[in-house]
Image 1: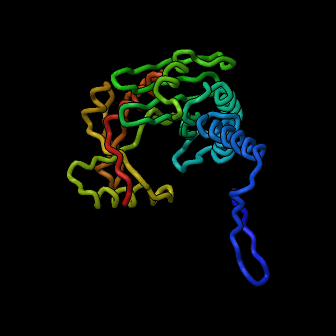
Image 2: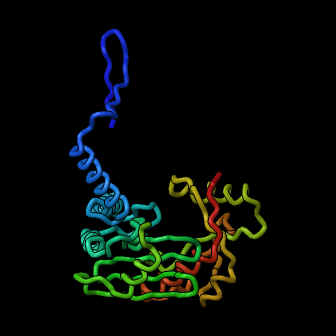
Image 3: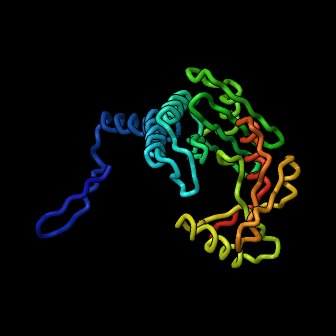
Length: 164
Length: 96
């Protein structure tokens, strides 16, 4: 712990390395453990809120027809709501995806690990579909019950996109 | 992913160097949508054909190079799979 202090006529960097209490040391250790835990969990509550904000921004930017100058369909509030719901259901401990608008009015969540490891979830108003390239595997599927998360998709996300 | 008309717009660039490809982008795309491309994906036509889709010339005026990738599946899941395959087999070129 360091304390920076100055006086009118001289400057000093006052580092009280000596004389810190055991209680202060214990508190410092507990605070460090909390921050380390948060850093290691990319999809923490804060990250979910950040992702939801990205979805909202995307919806606002793409809410009108022709938002890309080439006839793109608008991203409706329905699609944005479903995307936020899916963000809420993402498994814990995975890398945060990129959030992308699609010209046919859908929202895409993209995970790209490498050229041979990628997974996309595309969300419309009625359903969500996913497809991936995971080495030689080509998983894909869809689900309409958006109160639950696709189990095969959750398994693949945990297997290939775990936050380190 | 294709648009609602089930087409993806491309330009044939077989005999073009990097400079010319970006020139094509600026001439045909920037002039239309007023946004400069910051990257592109280079792809061989045979990859499209391997997915049972087609690269069809559009014969637009002054744009003999323009074509559309057609034959996208109606099913969203399959279309997403196809778009991933195209991305997987293409080369990303970021504008320098």
